Image 1 (cartoon, rainbow, N blue to C red):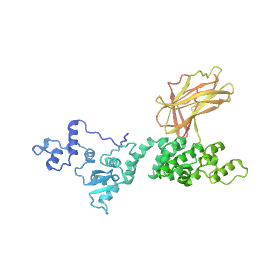
Image 2: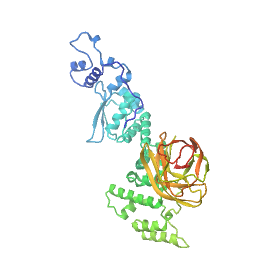
Image 3: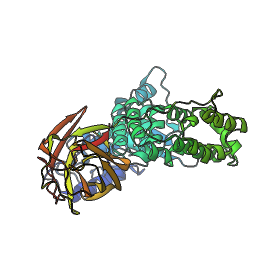
Image 4: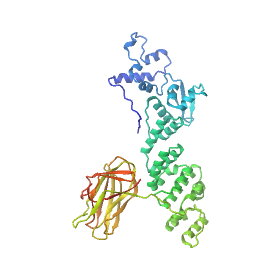
Length: 479
C-alpha cells in the first residue's frame, strides 16, 4: 500500500526512453573518472555542440523533479548516514542543504551553533527503509508507506520533526485500524504521544473488546498499556474474557523474560495489573470455571471471593467488585410510523433487506425488528451484514415478540466495524407468525447523534422492504 501527499508527474511530450536512460546514467554519477561523470550528465567530450544535447537538468524542468533525482544519489552528496543496528546497516548518501530545509533537527545538526563537520553520521535506532521514506519526502514531497514500516517511519518522522510525514503515518494507521491491531497501535500512539490516534484505537477496543483482547497484538503490548486497558470502564466484554486475556498476556510476557509459563510466574509478571481485574463481577459459575481453577489466585484470595459471593458478611477484597459500565448501544430509527393490516406482513423464507451508509466509522451491533401483530410469538431469524456482496457477519437466532409495535433487538455475535462513505447491506430472513407490524414513512437520511445515515433500496430484498416501508426499522450500533 502506498500513500502520497503529492504526486509527481513527468512533463508531457518527453521521450520516455531517453528520459529513463538519462536517469539511469545520472544515478551512475559516482564513477571516479571525470570523463565518465561528464558523459553521465549529458556532456560529451567529443562533441563540441553542447547546446544541441539535452542535459539532465534540462530534461527535468521543475525543481522538484531535479531534487527527486538527487534522492539517495552519490552525486554532490556531502554527508553519509550509516543507518540501522550493527550488522544490518545501510549507507545512505544525502545533501545537507536539502535535509536542513526539510527538518529543523537536520538544520541544527548541519548549520547550527554546535554543528560539527562530520562526513558520516551513525543512526542505529532507525530502520533503513523508514529513513529512506523520510528522505524521499524531503527530496520529492512524496510519502510512500506500507504496513511493515509505517511505525518505524512514524518514529523517524517524530525524531527528526517532519510533521507532514508523521501526519501521513497516522492517517495510514487510522485507515488500517481494526480489532486485531488496535491494542498494539494504542501502545504505539501512547509512545508517540498521538492523542487522536489513541482515541481512534479506544473506539475500536471499546466496541470490539472481545476481539481486540483475544488478538495476538494484545499479548504484545507493554505493561503500562495493559494496566490502562484493564482499568477501562467502557470495555464491551464479559469479565471472564478479560481474565483469560490477561493470562494470555502474562504467558507471552513470561516467554519474553525467559521464564517458564507457570501460574506463579504469570501472577508475578502481571504484578499490580492482577488487581485491576474485576473478578467478583463475574457470575459465580464463571468464577468457579475460570479464576478459581487457574492457580493464579492464592488460596486465601479464592476462599475470600467464594465467601463474597455467598456470605452475608462479605470479606474485604483487593479486587474491584463493580461491573464495567460498557458501551450503551445507539439506535437509528428509519421509519416515522408503524402499522399492521390483516394481510401484511408475511414471511415465507423471503429476504427483507436495505442498504445504508454512514459519514463516520461505527460498529454495527445488530438490528431492531418488528414482531407479530397478532399477539405473542417467537421468530427464528437469520441476519446478515454485507459489503459489496462480501459477507461480514451473520447470526442465526430467535427472538420473542409481545404483540406490540415495539422493535425487538437481534444481535450479531460481535460488533462489526463499518467504514464511512461506503454502502453496506443488512438483511433479515424471518420464520414465524405470518403477520407482523411494518414500517411506514421511511426516510432516506437520518441524523442519529454524531452519525448521519443514508438509506437506499437493496436488490437483495425480495419481501417488499425498501426505503419507504417494510421491516428492519432499526440499526443498532456503537460509536
